[in-house]
Length: 287
Image (cartoon, rainbow, N blue to C red; front, side, top):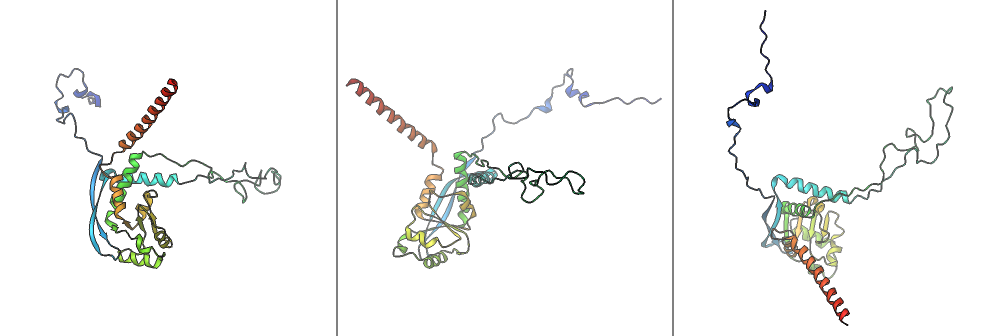
């Protein structure tokens, strides 16, 4: 007669036995109690050449902006561009179901004795002119993104495009007489920009003749700080700044910029208005 083998289970080990008096020394770890905190935001410096209107290099400047860590930079920028594109959707697409289409109230032909498939309405989704199955309906596509995260996505994208970026000396006075698209295209070629490539110009102030000279170039986007957006930064092959635009970026997206200062300034202004109103009320009561 065969001797039955002992039945071993996972919990039959002495590790899980309550009567075991052996210390579990192998479970002790030598990890420190507090791990060093890894910063999620860093600062990177990019050097940009400065060109004059004739295309000659006359100096260089720097971009010192906040950037996300390499592990999270792609996700932050992706979230920012998806937010911008999705918030631009109007969400007005609409279709009619078989119950909303006009007509179709009468049964086309009898149910039986015709040799044809049964049909109860001419507005069935299987026929032209009928309703739409699972068609779009008006909806709100907007999504929310934190303000600091959105600013971080913008600064990260701008710094990633620094390889294909240049700084051009102010050239608004060159088109003071009249707008000429041909002269603007020639200037782009002197700056090393192919008019057939997608390019983005960021200027604090755009002169009227400069705007008229560049608006007929389909691959060019002329932006100001108010119209700066993530899609045009990522979609451009070449990026052109003026020195004033670089100073604005360093101030608005730099590592030393503190958003809490604006909030505190706003609170102080509101507090000052409140004190003035209280003094006016006291003077009215005294009178």
